[in-house]
Amino acid sequence: MGYRELEPPPRLRELVECRWVRTGPAEPGRILPDGCMDLIEMNDTIVVAGPDTSAFIAAGSRDPVQGLRFRPGVLPRLLGVPASELRNTRAELSDLRAIGRPGSLEELVATLAAEAPRTETAPWSLPMLADVTRQLAAGRSVAATARRAGWSNRTLQRQCAAVYGYGPASLRRILRFRRAVRLLGAGAAPSVVAAQAGYADQPHLHREIRALAGVGIRQLRQPSSAANRSTEVPSGSSTVA
Image (tube, rainbow, N blue to C red):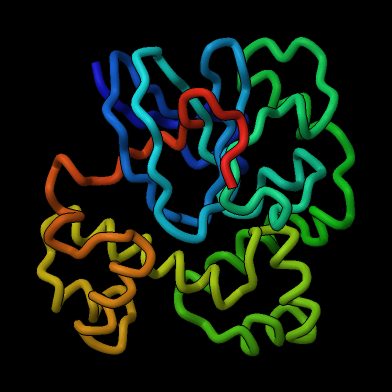
């Protein structure tokens, strides 16, 4: 019973961060932005969870749910849909593109990965995508990241919107927030988290947690308010802006 994260299938490791399952009934949960997108299978429907810019409150459900969480920037290249069009949404996959009978989620991803990607949603190779993500996650400036890749700042801004769903500065902010949440979850003190995650100081950390999570650090750490990592679609709705 409950929510579990599992290793991705070996053949999809370059694309998928983890496989997750949720069994048994679940109460409403707070989904925190992390720069990732998910494919979710529930009630015989496959849902795409777009990149979030702030906390998303998911309704509870009695039904089991499973999904694949993709590495930042990967799923749009497989779908051929710019991430900016999916920002802060939960949409049925069949509304985004025509697909045959998908079989398992793993088989669906393998089929999508075998197709030639669109230039708009896959302007970079997978190794370059991973490098841009690493640079921004490490706090590198937008200008330095663009220069390292041989692009102008404007080109990086435009391409990041299609690939990640937001610009490089916003992605850097969300990845820093994700690192802070992990440190807080491991029991680190806020002062330590602020220093290790790359915030200017502890008040800066508190402001960012409040802005992106919608709650303060103390409430975020409470089990009843902690983030539910399954990014499901709310009951009775296939798309939520």
